[in-house]
Image (tube, rainbow, N blue to C red; front, top):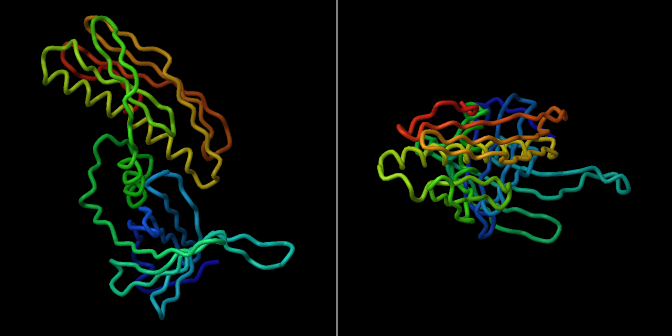
Length: 262
């Protein structure tokens, strides 16, 4: 259920972060129109979206944000979870979160988007939504995996536990530190852009997105580094799409020759 709003609520979107109990979360409240107000949030520990509906009591500056369903047997709406919080200044929001078994305090504060670093991320979203996505990406934790050698270069591999998307950095084999750093920044950006696409697809509002990434080839000679990957995804349209992603780097200069992410 949605309540029409014509005052300060209709003038802003809200990007918030804080805690449910002791668990850190990020929440976005998105005003699209008087009849279309939605919210979603993720725990920083899991990064998976929860999609919610929004009601607003203008007189009390009170938000009720819930995931509800209609119970056929009782003929009543039932909450899977519900937030109720108020604000005095639209910067700090306090209240509680409940589900069938728990009741937790909630404290959220507005995020200053001018302080969010945008490096490494390619954005399918624009404006307000992209900052929510970036905050998710800043909580992705990469783990070191195996170390391999290819054409006299030592490659340190990194992966993300949820997506299984892996990519390497060059640990040894290029003497010029500035060039090595430039190449590794390109490899890091490639991995984060792949991760960004994965999480955006997996968290689309149908809750059924699938994004399968497979690194098909890594070719290295004295002059070039060539990476090819295949992506099989079904995100918002329900249609499965197969695409090829490529990154070609000049090892002599550290510059991109070709990238399908650009």
